[in-house]
Length: 109
Image (cartoon, rainbow, N blue to C red; front, side, top):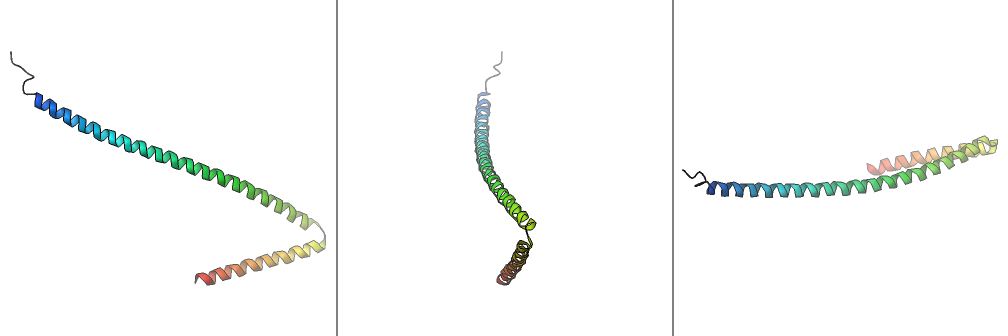
């Protein structure tokens, strides 16, 4: 009988070498994907901590604004003298806002 395996040793060696090369390429791609997944996880954790910080900042700003609105409402409900002062302060704040806007606009040009 003829020996069918004779002469196929070189082909088997070539196929083994190609399989090893493909396995090494696959391992390097898996390693890169693992590194990328780790980087994504790290970035997501950083963004979550940043958002948690923003949440606490918004809560404190909400508390400040709520207190300011309560004080403002109390001033409006009080007598005429406080209304005059409130009117002067409001006009002054608007004037300061437009003055700062004008100065910033002039500095940019």
